[in-house]
Length: 435
Image (cartoon, rainbow, N blue to C red; front, side, top):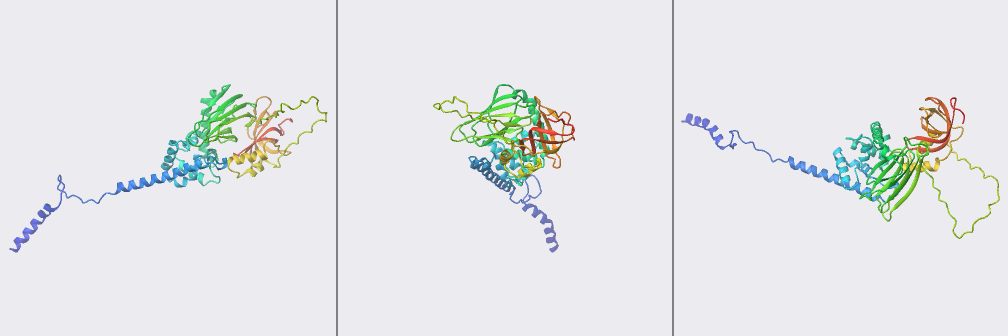
């Protein structure tokens, strides 16, 4: 009897297990007991937190731009400057693209638009890296111009940026040269952040009529130096509607060149400015426009000439105290932002003469004949390697790269990119005839 009961238990146990173990209706395999799935909720929570962080950064950037738009130029922030300021809050390239897309959607423009367009997309895929490098740089990035200069000089991809910039400029020159060299006048209507390049050969009048905009923006107008003849003139008439959003910058050569003029709109009235610029053989400079003072209508007419008191004394030539181009750049080193640099150049150096006997230099490239009797010569200062550009009426056609010369003249420009330009220059050396 005992053996019969044991046999029944062994035979029946599997059958009992099959009856009481849940199975799939389509298989004899037991159904696995799964834990509740929480992956989707975790991902949703993470994406929600990322979006919240992005919106917080976007608001800070917007507030930074709007809170400084009515302040002095030194305290204003462009969208790219504000983006650099808060770039520590961005962790991925996707974060940066999302912020830029939202800024563009709300009328601020894409902060990287000009950088990319000017360099044939040299920064593509490296926006976050650019921002991180700019954030820890030695100079604060506030404006679009600051960002462009940083990209050309201090960014780790500067060589790639400059190569793309040169290619983009050559393309513009090929495509648009005929249109923008047309005689007479033309009208430019900026509607946001960007750069308009103007090629002038002889004479041109340009009307700049920016859109009021829905957010602050800076539009740069670059006066291209290539192919311009000495004495070329451009007259620029800026007409800004009643709005504090637009700022127009006039620059020499490129968007990162020397700042010639800044005109900002006003929320209280329309803005109108008329200025003239001329090409001195190496750079565009603002023409000094004297405002003659007319005598009142009821003032008595002067009928007799004053007695002759002899020839007027010759005006004393203003001379700088620095003995070399390198000393000039050393004294200007570290002055920021760029408009402060320009102010110091105008106050201390522009229009002043170099000290005798001049600067020792070597010829960098073959001289170029300009219009009339003028020649352009590219030099390199001995010892420092500073680039010196000289315009002279001397016949310097015998100069060749590597020749040693002494150069003196009147300073026409000192660039933030560390070169010095001289006009009315005098060169002396074994292969240069005396003036």
